Amino acid sequence: MTTSKSLGLAGLALILILAGPAARGQAFSFGGEVRAGESYSRPLKDELKFCLLPSPDSSGWTISISDSCAPDAPNFAMIATPPYRGPNPIYVDAWHFLPDARVFSATRSFRFVLNRRDHAHLFGLLSARKDAAEILAEAERLGKGVGEVTVAESVLAPGTDPKQPRLLRLRFKAAIKLPARAGSL
Image (cartoon, rainbow, N blue to C red; front, side, top):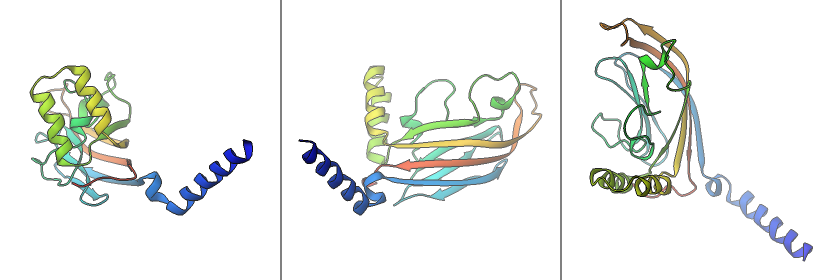
């Protein structure tokens, strides 16, 4: 019995070695810097892109995974990363870096769907005001990609309201993990 189990584990190890990264998914690590009003994009796999999209008022950026970094493109991370109301880790806003802010750490973790079809499905559930447990279960099921953005440095400037500063510059590191089979967009 032990021999059979050992051969099974050895066979599985051999399959994983031969299959390489495709069996385990694909990971991307990179860093960058953006200044107020600038966007950042980096291609991932197939048509997926990592994007930092600037807020219109220069108060920060939105983390987006999508097939386009256009401001009106569907954000695959926004739809799969709760909470859906209130502060969300995909928003990197200047006020998060104020000394008394107790919202997020420098590291933002998020999930994302892999295509427009899954985005539309979750968006439909949210629009129909379905049960929160159902929406969260679907977000967990469909949010197969995971990511993390760590803010290494932020430079703030006063805004017109002292409680609403502007974010002038952001230096970050990102780690994105796609599942073994990313599916079609």
